[in-house]
Length: 236
Image 1 (cartoon, rainbow, N blue to C red):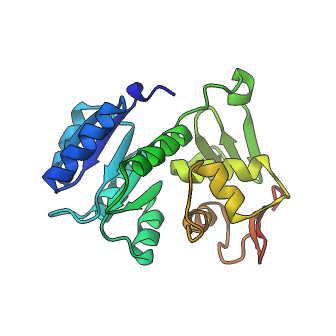
Image 2: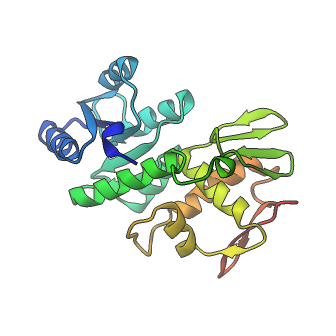
């Protein structure tokens, strides 16, 4: 994918960091906007088509988590949280909110770039896929995952998914009745060096269960195989 076709928006109240990130990503070929808070973000989105938001948690007025939840309700815009609050609880809360990734400050710009590229790859259809593959539907129970539209439906009713949830569900559906461990899923979903303590897959599994299972506490489709990983059973 050509990075120059992607429009990024940095939301951070630190002017120096905001401009440094903007300058770095612009140099890498992206179209980059930079704003300081929620109202500025809302105004920017009214006049610009954005492909990904890089969102700080600690903002004046409406905080990043609140903004992220609001964005999730409005559209499926990919979000990377960028924050000095990098404790495990904050990371999990950010991912539960629906963020596609989370990077703590201070950070290496190259790592941010790798994560942006990974999230953007997951948010767009793979250009190397054949037209037939791109249009394939995947089914389980009353659900249909439309690969071309990046859309999940249940009895023709749309079930809203984040990009991360869609990607993970697709991986499970393309590997039914097969145990996949956390490392395999991180490799398939992120494609960059990750921490052995990365819990984003577990968080995303929890979100998926709340959306597709009748009883998330006793899942029928997406089962945990203790000590091994996760198993997706199409017939539930």
